[in-house]
Structures are given as C-alpha cells and as structure tokens.
Length: 574
Image (cartoon, rainbow, N blue to C red; front, side, top):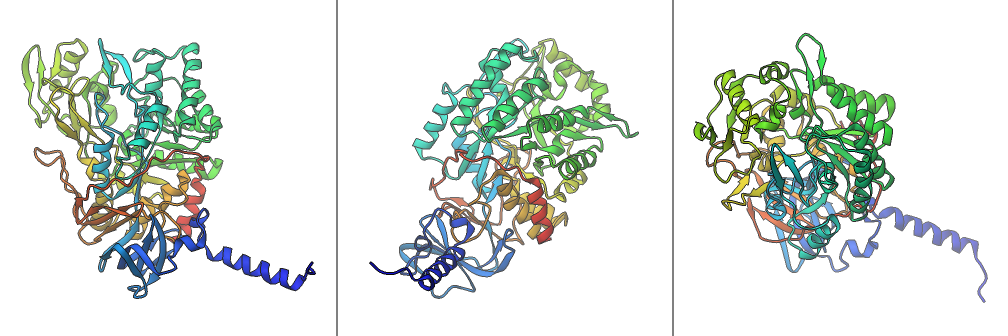
C-alpha cells in the first residue's frame, strides 16, 4: 500500500482547481474536453466579427467556433488555427456584430383569439433575430381558451391539455428557435366555467389552482394575467395563482388594466399598476409588467417606470417590465372601448388620444351596411361613438371571415418619447407581443408588423436612428438582461460552453420594414445576416434555411427575477 504524500495531494488539488477554474461558467454540465475539439475541428466557425458579450464585457474582433450546438472556442482575430469538420461551415462576419441570440420576453403562439399557429409564429420571430421566446402571455395559454363574450362563444382551444401540448411540441421537433411558455389565467378561467366580466367565485378560484399546478409541473415558466381583456379577473384570484406559481419556482406576467395620468397631474387608473405591485409583494414572485408603453397613457410612462424602479430599489421587489418598441399596435375595437363600460368620449379624454389616431384593419358593417373600410381612419368622435354603441347593441360586425371579436383596429397611440424613456431603464426588456394566426374561415395567414419589427427596430430605429441607447446597451437589453432575470444560464451570452444561439447583424443597415399598410404587414427586416440556433443556421442572408433545431424549454429551476442583478451588471458595464 502506498503512503499518503501531502505534497502530492496538495499538487493534485491545485491542478484540479486550476482545471475547474479554466472552464467557463456556461459549461457546468460539459466536460472541458467536449467544448474544444481535440482535433481542432468545429461544425461552424464565425470569423472576424465584432463579438460582443455583455456579461463578461468582451467586445473585440474575434472568431467563434461551435461544436455540437455549443460554443467551443472564442479567440481574438480570425482564428487561423481553428479548422472545420468535413461537413462544417465557415461564415465571414467581417464588419458585422456577432451577438448572443435575442430573447423575447413577451409574445404569443398566435395573435388572434381564434387561431394558434406556434410554428408559423416561431418562423417569423427568428427572422427578427430571436433565438428564444416566451409565449402564453396576456392570460392566454398556448392551448387556447373558451369564453362567452357579448352573446357569442369564443373558442380557440387546441383540444389538448397543457401537458399534452408540451409533449406534442417536444416530440414533433418542428421548432426553428427555442420556445418557453406561461399558463394564462383567462384560459384557466375558461376551464372552470367563468363568464366574461364575472368575478371568479371562491370555488372557481379553488378549481383553478390545481390546474395551474399541473401546467407548472409540465414546465410552464409561471402564470400570465389578462385582466385588461377580462375585467372579471380579481386581484384575489391573481394573488392566489401567484402564490401557487411561486411555490413551484415560477414567475408572473401581466397585461395590466391601464395606467393613466391626467395632464393636470391627477392620476387615474393607477390602481392597475398598484395591483401588480401588491400581487408581486404578496407572493414575492418575479413579476413582469407587459408591454408597458402600450398600457401607460397621457404622460404616465415615467411615473410607472419610477414606481417600478423604486419598488425594486427600496423594497427589493423582483419586478421588471417589457415594451414592444413599435408605435402602432392592433387590437379588438370592443376591448379598446372597455366593452361599453366607459363612455367613449370620456375614455379618450382620459387617455389623451384623438379619433384620427385609430384606423381600421378590416371592413366593418353597421345594420348590414358598410360603415368604414379597411385602413380608413376615424375622423370624428361621433364616428367612434356610433361604432362603439352599435357593437354594444349587437348591430355591428366585421367583414365576413373576420378573426376578431368585434373588429380589428390599428392604434397610433404609443408616443415615441415614452418608448425612449423606457429604453433607458435597464430593467425594461423587449417583447414584440406578436404572433402569426391563420383565419379559420378564409385560411389566410394574419400577421402583425411588430412580429417582425422588435429587435431590428431596437437596433436600427431606436439605437442608430434616435440615439435612445448605444449599440452595446441595446445588446445588453436584448440578451443578458432577460437571460439573467429568467434564469437562462446558458443563453444570452457569447462564452465558451454556452448554447450556440447567435445573431449576426450589420449595425449600419439593420432596420425593420413591416408596416400597418397594405402589402407591407409581413416584410422581413434588413441587416440580419445570420441567425444560429443551437449551432445550426436558421436564417442565412435574410432567408429561412428550413432547419428546425429549436427546443422546447421546460422550466425546471426557480426563476430568479433578480432585477437588482440586472441593474448591477448594467452599472458595471455602462
């Protein structure tokens, strides 16, 4: 038997410690030998790009080598010693930015209450550089929902339970990027028989809780609320659902009811944001306020941002927000007019908008006669009031085959100044609130422009065009900030051992093109040369390659929601 030699033991421990320290934090589950090929051969090599990793601060001309879906090596310069495998591919990224893939914190599996088009939506998102996205927002689970609304039954259920849906998505292997989702309270309300606008009973709340537990066990990231769309949603139900979500390690996200600050300084409807703060506080749950600038009107954005930031800094609440970054959005007319509960004239006065800021997305009929045509703007308050009253009385309808509850309307009410205010806050992420749907009557594919105009607009319009934030700050906001908050520890980074989710773009030409105009709804952005998901090229020179290497992300960890960590890293970098 050999004798114990303390000097040998000390040397061995030192060598072992050095080896462990040499492995990137992203490579926790990968032996060091699996990251860099011993023969120097890689599946994909991206040479001579400006490699930006906002977590480590790397910003240099470098070469990134990928092996088996993982970043294996990053070296300064053109990496002459890195070689390709027999079937490998090399990309020249000279003059381009090589960034971690963009992470979208708020989107949908479809943008219509009548259709769910998961894979079509994913293909649109990836063209905007999105490599990972979070669906199931605004209270709408990916399995759809059923509810009675204004005398009609709205039903877009897939016929699958949440766990069955997740299993189906995982087994089909048709995703072109990485997909995670939430469980929505509106879908849960439908499952327990709630009627639109009616508060949940104690029994119904009790029935919703195990349904959410089921969804969380299947990998849901948490719960989403759509209290704006169904005012019957109660704060009690939201809090009880939040407690269940947090107990399972999940988060919450909310399309809040409204925030309005009247110009004289009197705050109206602020209780919607306070409701979110109270829910966050009661459950100590990571809470994301969805598309903030779409829900803060009449100068209230800065107040809302300050309120969230103070809650984070003063109380340590795990709260953040996201915005779309697009000036125009499409929504249902009857929902926008609060289902007839508030006089339209008073509502528009409080919100601070005028009729000409709204135009139709489809033809609409009143008493059987054509009232207004698609893309026609409202010109008078009486037009808006007439249409609102007609829908409330059941005398109006959209064109044949419409996918809306009432009629789809374009809204030019997001002030650019409010978007710029939001972009300057590190805890505000990007979420396009988009989606692709298929009209079940006409089979027509329907798309909102913002589906293809979130990150390309962030870099091209807001950063380059308006100097709202620097290129480096935009990369931070699009990648590491949401990754840290959600707990995606191998995404949002360009480091050895991390997932090879990469977006390569031209900082001088990247720009969105989709617009709410005929023939321009689905124009893909310019300037995004390559989008790489799990090591495979999904977009090449702006065109889809047809590859589907994306994966379903089932949450198995506790969402950290560490807004203070996001702020700390931002301060360190900028």
